[in-house]
Image (cartoon, rainbow, N blue to C red; front, side, top):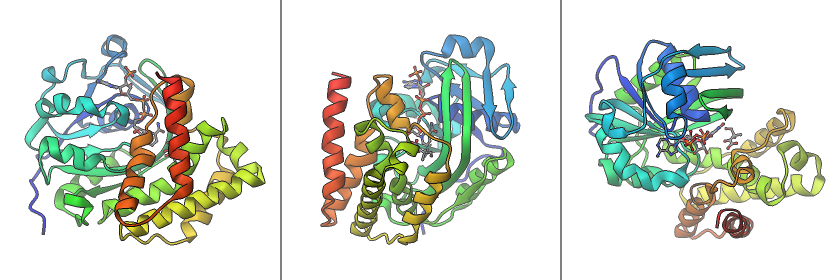
Length: 319
Ligand SMILES: NC(=O)C1=CN([C@@H]2O[C@H](COP(=O)(O)OP(=O)(O)OC[C@H]3O[C@@H](n4cnc5c(N)ncnc54)[C@H](OP(=O)(O)O)[C@@H]3O)[C@@H](O)[C@H]2O)C=CC1
Ligand SMILES: CC(C)(CO)C(=O)C(=O)O
């Protein structure tokens, strides 16, 4: 049984990175009445004056005033610190997280990919990290303006050393309740590593191929050659999970393929980053899963090749 801290009631939240993801979920939490503090970078001046505007398939709303900060030292320590910057910026977290976290507070990692929670546990200590996957299509289209296009559900779990299953803790349930009260569909899970691999079944093929092939989801699905490629890469993700002793049902592949076929044509977040000449989240989404699979004795040749191609394109794009 993991020894975990108790959180205050009600809980205060800090959002590190008020973009498409953090801005949307943070705004939902603030709208539900919780105390939420937003860390921003380039949008700080705008958001501190005008607040946040959310255009959402669940209903538009505006928060004319939000507690906005451009310096983590000026933020009050919070119970739950949500990490929602791109993982390419995570080298900044050793400076950002300590002042924002209450002594008994926890960090909730909502970024895509794998292998981030152990890095954060190094900064804030063990038993103070939770992780979550977000199935949401959201974009920040201008300062303080977030467009939530589709989906929105989350799965949250405790992080335990080496991704051992963390079980369901009271604090995990409390945080889950906060999101549910804010109108976010949510599951809590016992095993973070399983849900992270499950999300990678989508992110590894679609995010990676969208950049290499310069394609949207509908284009990848309508061409027989790329549809098969997506399916084969998904199969490799399941093999990678097996290398970490996590066994995902093969049915998940059919579910994700048919789901993507019916989804509105979508430009993945990695493709948006590429087009805007921002660094790509290659290490979190492909590199770390490859390392963990290799450590488990599993070789994933298609994903390895995709990783190498992306590394090349990323270096050309953002020298
Ligand atoms: N968008 C989506 O639908 C989904 C995103 N994700 C994951 O969520 C994570 C966040 O992605 P997303 O929200 O799309 O990205 P965005 O780029 O929209 O948001 C990140 C925000 O963090 C800000 N930021 C970066 N560094 C700092 C800093 N040092 N201090 C303060 N703010 C900072 C950026 O500010 P600036 O404008 O200055 O760069 C930006 O506004 C990624 O890991 C992504 O893969 C997962 C599922 C879906
Ligand atoms: C799966 C999806 C589209 C939404 O969660 C996503 O994670 C992304 O574009 O990176």
